[in-house]
Image (cartoon, rainbow, N blue to C red; front, side, top):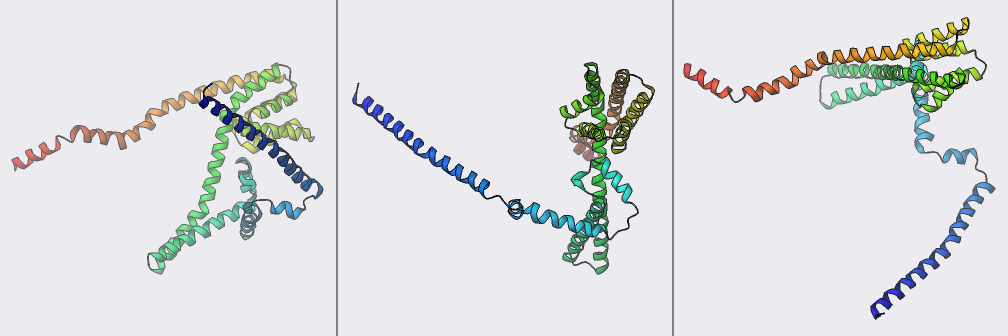
Length: 310
């Protein structure tokens, strides 16, 4: 063995020894620190104030202040349309756990903020007072309507998601019932398998039935919460079958077949609408570019010909 190889071997053994000693000395310290932290949490239980201070600043201060502000603003408005707002929030899936008063306060807060920003922008432009008032009013109106537009968008998206997931959910319900599961267990299976609005509604129906609510009432509540025509038809058929004693398996087979047929017809309808929808972008964006590329080189010649004719 050469001297270089011997030195390389000795340096490797020394490095391995040092690393082993370092690991051996470091591991008990880590264990001791873990034990200290464990004893600290076990021996000295945290108070409610300590637990609250451990939360982020946004959850401790900003979020409660914002919620109190929109609630105070919401109480200043008339309460005539609270039921309709509550129904719309329920159909939208209760976004942000907003109550009707919270939503009204959010609209007022958005109107005040956007109106103030628009007025401040008009002041920076050194416009007359009448235009400042006009800018502020337009900003306030926009702020009042933005939360409403957002809520309507949430409602449309949720309805679309439920309508899109319903045929596959009925197929899975049919398979589960054919395999021997009860209807309640099949709905629970679907809700555990899919994390979407329809699965959440199925889970809520099962929870209501476990709390003692009749199946027909729980299904009607689901139809009211979703406000989807297909869900209303499905619930009506199930309630009628439950009253008449018809087999749920046959009902599920018939409903799943009808929904598959309806979804195929909807897809064909959308495919036939595609050429008409593509016509406007083609006229506005594609055809002008084609005309410029094709007729652009001939424009100078046309201009020269017209100039010579003069």
